[in-house]
Length: 204
Image 1 (tube, rainbow, N blue to C red):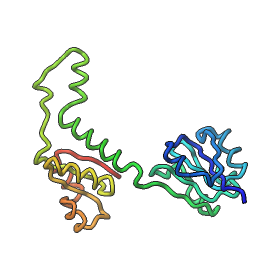
Image 2: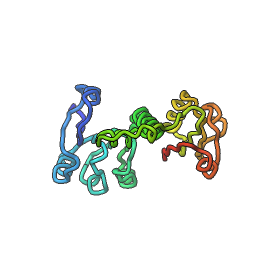
Image 3: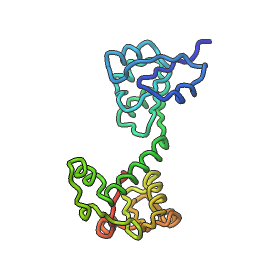
Image 4: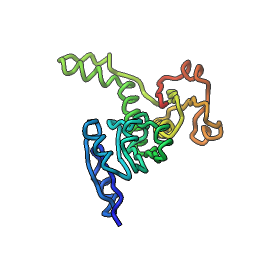
């Protein structure tokens, strides 16, 4: 029996590739290049692994006779035509938790940089200037952090910023108050969050 064919349309980590193991026939193409992608799909593949640069639109899905799975190595699916895939009987999967820690840590880094004026202080120092009093910044302790969108990433940011002694205000129309309470967050309206927060992070 022939092995299932997996088309890898973008660069993936070695760990991802090794996870496929020896049970698949692996093919590669540059998914961002339509002149490569469409012929590669037309040769017959069972699955295609993509990231954000490959557009699996209706044309690409129609070209891929026998395609069973479109796998997105990441969260967003805006580059996949979901209705076209559904009509063709193609399963679309993603990795919704793949970038949670990275995104949360980046948000936390930006909050810290904002509080301490790190970017303008760095720019001034590069230009040979140092007005120390301008870059004192503010402590995060006992400040209010407003989290707009209290999903996986927003909750992780809130959890870690609580360690700085910040009070967490959360706005999310789909979140139950009991869940917010579990994370020591106060569920409020968007207007209240905007009015009371010292720092705001958006995760929609």
